[in-house]
Image 1 (spheres, rainbow, N blue to C red):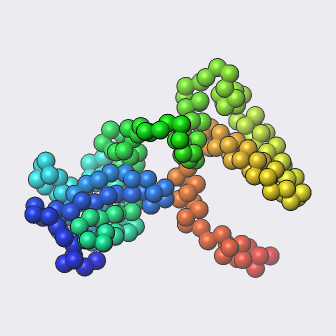
Image 2 (image 1 turned 90 degrees about the vertical axis):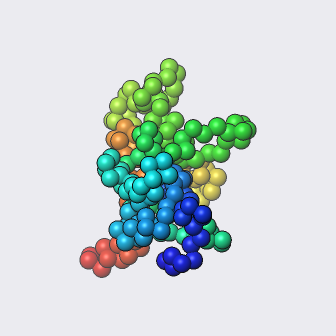
Image 3 (image 1 turned 45 degrees about the horizontal axis):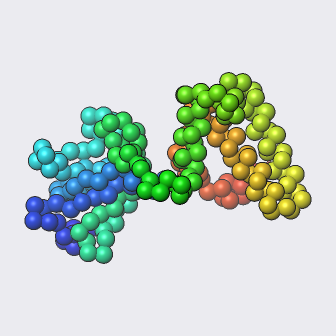
Length: 214
């Protein structure tokens, strides 16, 4: 990175938006001076400048919730940074995954669907059981019932795919995705766990290697 191009403000600071590399969720907004930016690049983990304490602070130095840097990019004016990281634990001092966890939609009826939102809803049905909820029912029945449903839905996907019926396949894939998430919550597997696993794979290469070994 060409540090000479970064336009630090009159206090020698530049805002840094920290983003989760896998989910693209904004984790926090902090400030860097030239020294903290150089440390970040050199060490590979985020280091910021505290405006209140007037000192450098390495994220996770006391909590252990470090942020491994994947990329750093500046905006068109070179006066703001976006840093993509792989986080080891919550980003917020409150224990939340992101500092931006107090979300309120201006138009709640237009709240967009997200796998994260669905996962959290499913998780909530386990931690706070709701009478009449199918999801709660699955958790109450336990892993055997959940796995049975995953098996059934997998079969339905295969049947729909074999018929080359696109709409039916989409419907069955959605059912399978839901039941897989129920299984994940039951086992304590997060979306980030799966995303991280996919990110480090080269599926085609692995398949080729498996075929060659036969």
